Image 1 (cartoon, rainbow, N blue to C red):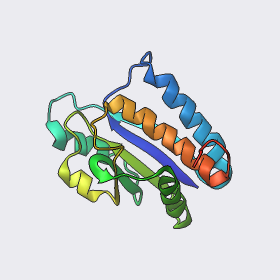
Image 2 (image 1 turned 180 degrees about the horizontal axis):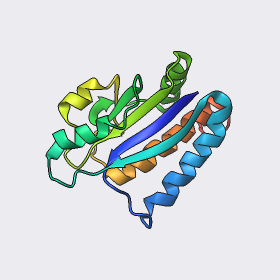
Image 3 (image 1 turned 45 degrees about the vertical axis):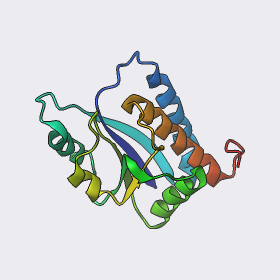
Amino acid sequence: MLRVRIAAVGRLPARAPETPLIADYLTRFAQTGRPLGLGPADIAEVEDRRGGGKAAEAALLSRQIPTGAAVIALDERGRQFTSPEFAALLARLRDDGQSDAVFLIGGADGLDPELRNRAAHSLSFGAMVWPHMLVRVMLAEQLYRAATILAGLPYHRA
């Protein structure tokens, strides 16, 4: 079973419009992914209240990475995967015996370079910069989409 964690800088308010979307996609991912050995997914939010910048955020994010986890950084300089390629990455991690995968979402200034370099994979949702809260929605949707691709369900239209 490949457990998934989204470790993100910043707290999403309970009444934010993104909150129900993320919850819905992560619930769908858990339901669809469970028979495939994927999920569940959770979100770990961290917040640097002392203003220590990217290095302080990196220290907080690092604490959210289980020992031996596959680390995937979300970064505008990362690789742009197609949805089937992203699904294949999750399947490969699962099939290689990974028990945890952690997706890192940095703060407004991005991820600390040392933490970004620690990642086995770097993922980009395109050359444009996206609000960090919206990236959570996009990642949650792609996790669900990946599970449907691997399950052979018609959600993804190639």
